[in-house]
Length: 603
Image (cartoon, rainbow, N blue to C red):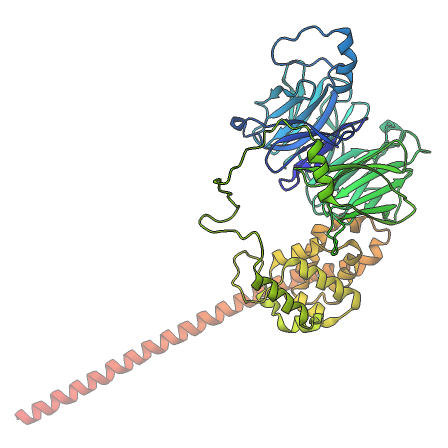
């Protein structure tokens, strides 16, 4: 994996070394690159990027060994002895790290230091890096929408071209080194000789974070396949590069429980050989697939086996999986789990005959054993009794480490009380006052988007009109989008059906818009898409046709009301003028009579 996780700032890169899987490279929250030995379970090397480079690591990719390709290094190199040649071939792997500053760092595990820096090419953060399988070339994609082909022998950019209007979030080089896949929201296949677009593939509504070639066959044989995954999408799409160019839609879909975070696969060299796939999702679960790629399949494929991990406490808590690597034997998988600062690596045998496997591990024991035997270049500071420990939090406030007795008593009281049903909770919660903003005042009832998704799924499964009406009453578009994004795939079609039934309601249009934004790929993979959405399409089309007539009617009514208003204004103005004239005449008569009376008195 070429650090597909690097496209998102929330996902930390974590990659196994190719072939031998002897090393695990990852960047933790502290910004340091750590390389762990998967055999001895120890920390092999640690590298802190220079602060002046602003080198926050976004993506990682392992490269070929130094003995295979001649690279430019910093400073003179002495001639290697024959006895050292075997060691260099085994351990001299390079790491390419894309940074937020727009530079690419090449780290040498053989030297334990920075090999060279590739900078001056990108004006935005580097989201993805990919090595050429044969030549001394490296490709990088950035937020500046450009792709750069770097020559490692000179350390300079060999070629640079604009890939898309949006940021380049994922790259992948074909096994023969002749084609390059790039993606933002549109997937493009480039001919590396001419740097021209060979094919385009559309179907994702969000940024593509994963691109991998699934077969090694040439594209002119209709046997070249690749897979893609996007942010906030719970499936992987497989695309076939056809000789006739009729490859606009994905041919196979693999359903997941969450957004894909780490992918490892064993490519297929022939139609008789299946593709093996291991996908670690954002929710920490591992899904194993095995499929023969031979043309389109209408039905989405579920995992052959799903693996979860939990601790051994009385109330088990899930342990997130960070990465997985497939071994030569089909039953063995190398797992990395826990956290990025101190991961646990383990080779496990998984029985794929079982659909769901839950592995229980004592993480604290594993961590303590790993810490005792780990070889670290970081010195542990000596802390005396006078030292102050600063706890993260707001300045001037103390962050309590242990809960107080009052809190424990409160929890005990809460456990003694009778738990309310969902209907009773809905009766006490006013969904019109839902707030997802931070800093909401305490005591006000509010629902988070996770609760909305749970309620919506329960309402769709039980067909409870009360629950559905409560959920559909929300008017906040952001809450609707996040709720639909968190829905599992089996709940998408029932939601679409509910939208179709209540389509006349104004708020249901927002729900339909959110479904089409987040689950377009899943809907496009359904074999009976026309029957599922045909009625809804005709309703939308009739509304669009009626909208033109309503627009004309609105214009006529507006013109008529304007004329009526103008006529009323003129009549009112004329009336006021007539009143003024009458009043003036009356005053003139009164003045004349007064003058006549005065003259009579004088006479």
